[in-house]
Image (cartoon, rainbow, N blue to C red; front, side, top):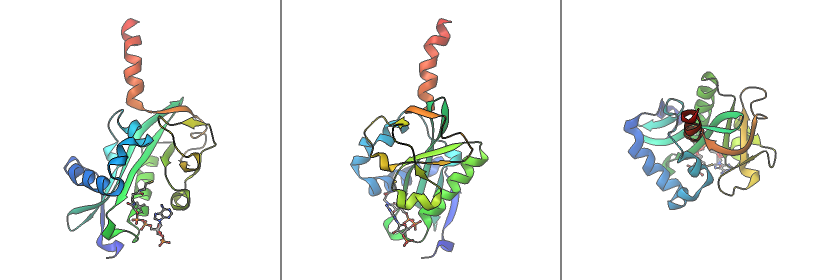
Length: 179
Ligand SMILES: CC(C)(COP(=O)(O)OP(=O)(O)OC[C@H]1O[C@@H](n2cnc3c(N)ncnc32)[C@H](O)[C@@H]1OP(=O)(O)O)[C@@H](O)C(=O)NCCC(=O)NCCS
């Protein structure tokens, strides 16, 4: 298997069942307890900025991006990223991350955040977020809280609890109707 045998496409609704299977295989039932999952529960992911890797018409890898807010800052949460076991170590994961970052940049996103291993994501442009700058809805090893800044100043604008942007809209509604 070579990377050249794999095609990469923006995610479509038809990919959902296969993506769910890949994530179940990669993360198991424990995925529902993860901090990032809790944020993603707050609203939909950005499908146009999310990508799949396909081999012979089957989804073999997936990365999703979800719009987030933290204080006055806005950005995207990258994940889950998963590749089917038989397709690991040929560069699919890295290519999915690169595609997602490029799409985010073109969409005007200033910063992409994730919870993951620095040795994997460091070469792709991610670095540790200063400890205490942002908090997640569930405990996270601060060594694994990483960001890729796509526009200067966008990372510094993130502060406090990270939430799905849809959560803000829901919180704003009662105030708006009261005004
Ligand atoms: C992590 C994952 C997405 C990588 O996908 P992949 O397509 O195999 O990755 P790539 O082929 O682009 O990169 C492989 C390289 O990354 C390394 N690597 C893989 N996982 C790593 C990790 N957690 N930390 C450090 N390096 C890692 C491999 O050893 C390999 O190194 P090499 O190029 O020196 O041989 C895949 O292993 C996976 O689905 N894992 C289970 C789910 C998961 O942990 N997702 C990440 C959540 S943050």
